[in-house]
Image (tube, rainbow, N blue to C red):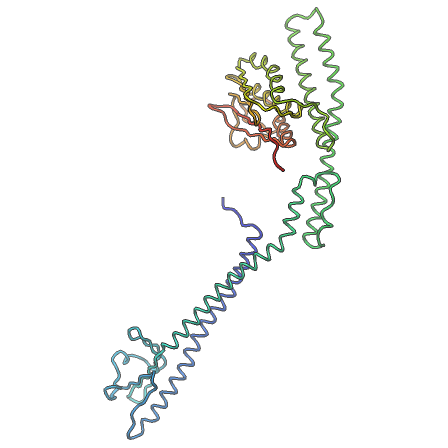
Length: 426
């Protein structure tokens, strides 16, 4: 697809096109004027010279004496004035005659049965004419170059406040509650109106983010109590001697689900606190510590499904990260790999930069790989049920922590999520 030119480029193009039109019209007018002057003035001059020669014809000892750069011919004239064959077909009036490399202006006059032709060498005139054309062409090109330069300078001057405003709007501090308004920094013109509109939109966005953070923190906080009741009830049921093996297995699943929900609630609380600008009180852990814990936790359900869990601790770095966030990212990726794989393997690999989780499931079509991190976006129908919120939470945590996540296809089928824990440079 062809890229559209930027606003600055369009301003420069407009200047050049306008100059092309004006300078082109001026140059064309100059050329036409020269042609008109050449025909009118030179024909009048040659006509006057020819009339003087004809007035002297009545003299008995008349011998034509044209000027040094002129040639005079007439039919029935002496040898040097005899009308050449190449001039006999000329009609009466002004003409341009070319003889080899030489060119002449010619004036033809018919008097009774005699035809008179006066030629004037136009070499000097053509040299001046060519010089003038060169000046016109050079001036035309210089005007285009000047127009492009002026257009660039004007675009740079006019668009500099717009570029500055765009940088201010893109700055992440604009989402903070105490961010100063943008409009006072600009004159009350179109850019000032744009800055005021950005102020209004950013204010609405800050309010929406604040409501979302309050909702997330309130809901997460309120869920902690019922989850604690469920976890306590599961512990009491596990201690009951009357439970058979099947019931005990179901209670264990309930306890594990409660633990997952408790971790998720804790993650939401930590994320809401971090996005509010409050200092983080979350514990920290290394990647290997979190991975060891989650691999141990997920090994049983993964292998119970008939999958092979491959874990390569590698040479992970000793850097400590926000433990709830790291646990949420790796845990969601493991849950997705387990949920969407019916056969094959789930592989977890650690490295100095981060980790990757690979599965042999149905995979995600290439057309959805960019959108799969959006809320409520799921892969192909064959990937089973799900709300499409896990990867959205993973992307949100990675963006907040400065981590990066990539989705790549796995061979022969499946997904490969690569997470780099190196913080991005701001």
